[in-house]
Length: 455
Image 1 (tube, rainbow, N blue to C red):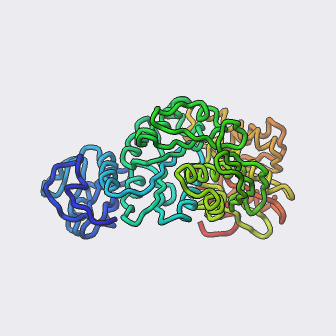
Image 2 (spheres, rainbow, N blue to C red):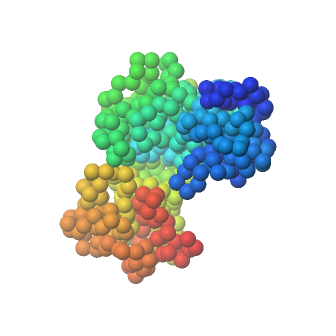
């Protein structure tokens, strides 16, 4: 973060005449140092207000808090009410200093991977700032904006949401010139009630787009294909099957090292592409990045080539070999769409051996949860899974659905240790094992137990 006067940073948050330079905005009191502003967030485990005095003693220029803190100077502690909203506003104030080509990425599934593909492409053309990991909320988005500088030519900001209004705030702070919506699924349906409501919430990303802003959407998603953006927004579709998409993929060949395909671009012609990511769903993510870059004026041949520079992050479809058994660790998140995609990937990678799926709960599905879990079990059975091992209450429903669809080897487990033991007893060299569940299930622990790794 480059230095910014406190007065400018807090514009619209709190009144101050101080022009003291701020060089960091932190939410962790342990990271406070001279020149920083500490945001006192009240969390489930700790209350930042309890650390405000220590932050000032450590050299913080100011503290932004929900309320006044007795015993601390009012000229350095600013009561802002909702400090998360205040942090977003501060991120927007800092972002206003710089003029990168900034793209916002959202969607029910695939947004982090799409963000990484976009960053890989933009990086081929100039210095690029991207959201680290999946830091896509009211804390993570400002954190990304604070990393902008005069040398930043491109920025890719992932934006998540839980409720209506969340994306509205984030996009007004980030002020993207273009946005991508990957897909409308059922994540957060517990809060929003329907996929139509999820679509409306995702479309809030347009609120921050300028006149003639660009909206790139998945044309194979029926809701996104039909949605009409505000009149000042250009909508461009990509897809595999859509006849209305400007950019499509054909001649897709899947393999253990990734996907190869041909990009068919109505404006620029055809280009060969290959990506080091397995699964057809990743072809969509790559197409989104290519479409975004080329419709922003970047060279299509270089953009297509740069897709190969993508690197996976965290626990998303990480391929590991364990004593001849191929493991797909996809433990970061799960919803019905990503479960379907992961099972399709397992079918492709496990074509020459037995296919084992270790599946668990998909969280935040609300009233559709039971039906969705049973449906995943049915998909596993019909997709050629040879052995299904599950953990968790949702996992038990997956096992029930698989057994009802005719899968004999469907085993719900009471503990992660039981699941790992079943794997050790069943698997042999040449098999492929998929681990997949929502992040809260920590399925990487089952993988670690099976492989004998520290957890």
